[in-house]
Each structure stands twice: as C-alpha cells, then as structure tokens.
Image: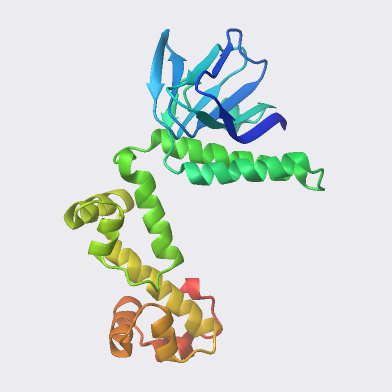
Length: 261
C-alpha cells in the first residue's frame, strides 16, 4: 500500500535555497531536479545537472541546495510497503540522470490529480502511476550508452511514430538534434536497434494498415496521409514490408486487427 503525504511539481526556489534534514524523513523522499543542484553524496557536496532523480529512504540524511541560480524540482514524500519500491535496485541518496524527464514530470502531474481528489479508484490509480514512475527510474538508472543524447533521440522517435506522415529525412532529423547525419544514424541504430529511416517506414506502414482496415479512404488517400507523394512508391514499399499490395491486404484482412499482421 502507498500513502502520499505531499507531492509538488515545478517547486521553485531562489538561488539561496538549501534543504537540510540531517536525520532525514521518517518515510521515502523522491526528488527530480529541473535545474542544476548540489547534493551531499558520500561525505562531499557534488554538483549535478538538471533532470536528475534522487531517492532517499527513511531516516537518511538529506542535503541539497541551489547551484548558482533559481532552483526548480518535482518532489514526492510518501510511505510504501510495495516491493517495487523497497526492493528497487536504485541507489539511495545518489542522483542519477533521467532518460525521459518530461514523461516523469507528466506522471507527477497525474499523481497530484489522483492524490488531491477522492475518486473511487484512487488507491489503485496511485499505485499504477507509482509503478510506472519507478519503472522509468529503473530504465534510466540501468540504461547504458548515449545518455547525453538519449532524451533527444527518444523525443525524435516519439515524433516519428506519432506523425509518420511528416516529410522525414535523415538530414532533417540530424539538423533538429544538431548532429551530423552519419552520427545520428549510428547512435539511433545502436540505441533502438533500428535505423531512423526504417523507423519512419515501419511507422508509415503501421499507420497505413490502420487506414486500410478501419477507414474508407482510397489507397491514394492512404498513401498521402502516410507521407507518400507517389502512390506507386507506397504500393511497392507496402508490399515489400507486408508481402501484399495495399488492395490485397485490405481484402484479405478486413475483419482482423491491424496489429495481427
């Protein structure tokens, strides 16, 4: 069972802010920074960049402060006997970088809503959100590789999969991340196991299947909505990835969910 005592997002403090509790809280404290900050870690004051998470267990010394300017964070003080928290393989009192801080901040916002309103399924909703939040913390902590670029790569991949019909090119994607085209292709493939252009094509084909099976658009209209300006090219690429032409796929699978093909 989880109990939230207080939760806040975008808590803003002046440059002289210091949070110092030598004996710690009698419960858990989770802090996610949105600006650089200094933390007391292993007997020393160390500076950490923005978008770090730090989890304090009960009665653990807590000390952090602003770092040269305004300090902003999300924070959560809570108790829990859930093993996904008590047995989580996360460090206590040691900040680590978040892969997707925007996603975590949205989870904080949802937790605030659930905490502040006594809805019928409040307890289970809070549990689901906390489980998701701790999954994201674990993913970040155990993630290896291109940590500095990972968040931007994740945003790019989300944009591709959300809007596959956009005019995506390697040069355009690389420019958006201020990387060379060759370097983007290298780290994208190493990070996600697929090239950025393959991701674009897969996303377009997935969207095309949805339109073909659950819409009344013509094949030409489907091609246009999926980012193709040449119907013949769309048909060739669709068949290359599915083994069927769009028309044949539509006739054969009309009564099946698109993701089963």
